Length: 256
Image (cartoon, rainbow, N blue to C red; front, side):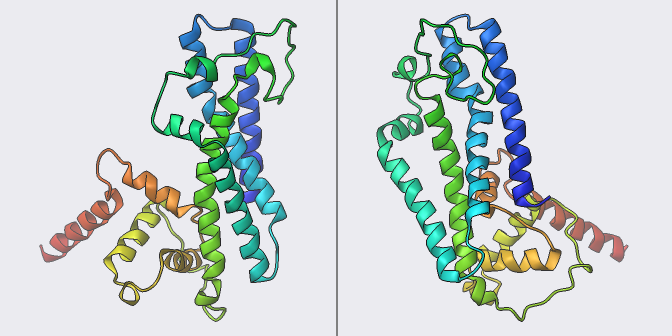
């Protein structure tokens, strides 16, 4: 499945789940303010932030220039500039969230009381009965942080496209990556930080592009994947540990 198809599929899933949550809330309500705050600040955020993320991703994929490197760079840089404008315009709220503060939660994540009843309107994310003053802003902030990774990676891909050259060819039918994309990203970063490729002078995007060509795979947002690897609770080098163990086991077996 290509990235645009994935975005469309995820948008549909997010919208369906938001509809489900909306029906539950309209029918059952909340027991108290604490439960309402938890819903709008936490529970609703997963589908809503992903909805915003994939909506922006779809827009990016459909609007991006198809030719001229300068046009592509300008397009992505404008996207990043817009994100920076968003962060600056909402700097107080962003800091409130980043610092894990709670003293304004009752103003940000409790619905404004309406005198007129609201009916269920599917996909209307701003319906007052299913919307607090800041839950959409929080979801947009979360989505935009993910978009920064995506746009920066795309920008580096475009800028380094000429470095790879058009004369690099691989037979994609010969090799395929059988493990997870996360494992491959872990391997790529290990090679990059070990400076074993071109003496450490080749950037991470160029290395990842080569691996994508060799294994006929699209790694997506490798910066985001790397961040997830760093946040592991147990071994952060799980894949490298596994293949090291496999190699040592095979060496011992061959010597016996």
